[in-house]
Image 1: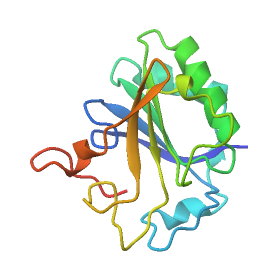
Image 2: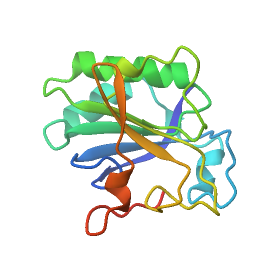
Image 3: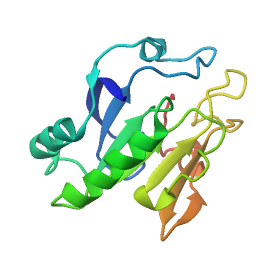
Image 4: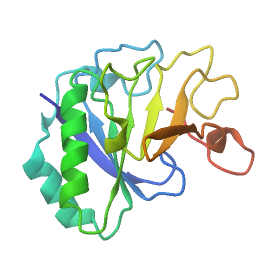
Length: 162
């Protein structure tokens, strides 16, 4: 089961998108130095299709993307909800997933997403905006993943602490 602790409209997590970031709890990764350690706890409310419909109704004309921040405890459910968003969105809201795992799960259907961020936070390598980061950010078009991590590290562009 997925649970969400909060959500916010953000502008840096997905470049060139106005994103509703849904912060999922029950993270199993326990990265040292995690900036959202509270999301490791079993907190928040159940995230299901009714909640997604409510968020779409409230924010769909203000956002271009919904990003699941976490969900590594139940990646198949993240996929299902991304598919649901694609079906229910009147304005064709894009979908993104930030996973703290070093790779996507076996059998992961990347075509359900427009963007994915892969990789645990490792303090000595830095966050997504660090030139030495181990994390990768991909845009997905027609099932092809294109590394766009450099959008976070170019001077004068995006600055993100993930």
